[in-house]
Length: 233
Ligand SMILES: Cc1cc2nc3c(=O)[nH]c(=O)nc-3n(C[C@H](O)[C@H](O)[C@H](O)COP(=O)(O)OP(=O)(O)OC[C@H]3O[C@@H](n4cnc5c(N)ncnc54)[C@H](O)[C@@H]3O)c2cc1C
Image (cartoon, rainbow, N blue to C red; front, side, top):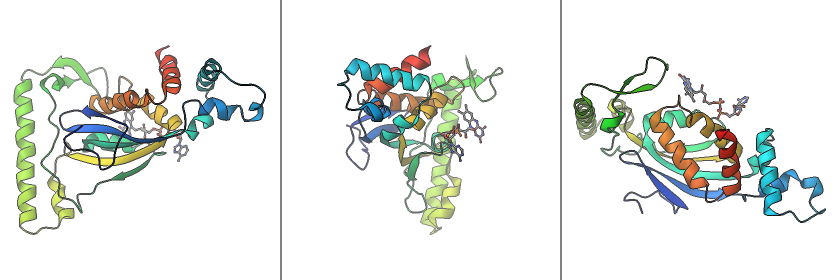
């Protein structure tokens, strides 16, 4: 159980980064649904085994028959830095609802990357970091913590002066934690994971994408297993 739980019960939770987590709130649809739905015209002809359905699921994924997968849905609750939220929100087919610092005061929780994440800017990849650390990872860690704390000092002082929360929030750092519900069908969800687990995706967003996959796998072993197999080779 996490110290600051999602607002509803969940099917499973994974801690992410220093103060974040991901919770699988609910799912809709069964693991064998894509195969069953794809066989609408043949449903009464024969009883299908688990192996039949697994084989068909793989076939559908391999050949891009996406609609049967859109009958299966998953709802998550995220607590993640604003930077991660912005990237996850780019995926347009998802439903999402985020807490708002117009109405809620931000608690003093911000992401400070661990020392091993204090990597140099990569020269080969446009967006990414290289495998090499900067000369003073501990110094960078401390500077990030200090500047975020300073920003929160000012934020809280502005609120104490009576400034509207919607204006005061402008000083919050991009690593401030935010929270949101997120729901999508499994076709578009897996499309997003393909992009956000790739080597050129931001490491922090990859942490959440990996957690999504790990939470979904026990619920949808056929679908996730088939997807992983396809993406390995
Ligand atoms: C490594 C990486 C770096 C990125 N860098 C930047 C960046 O520098 N700047 C930036 O702005 N963005 C950036 N992005 C975001 C990127 O450009 C896409 O907006 C994001 O990945 C969503 O992809 P998508 O549009 O394929 O998928 P989604 O929005 O998840 O949609 C899934 C699929 O649904 C279909 N679809 C959804 N909406 C429509 C529609 N209205 N019309 C037709 N088809 C639709 C499409 O087939 C689409 O592929 C980056 C993404 C990644 C993974």
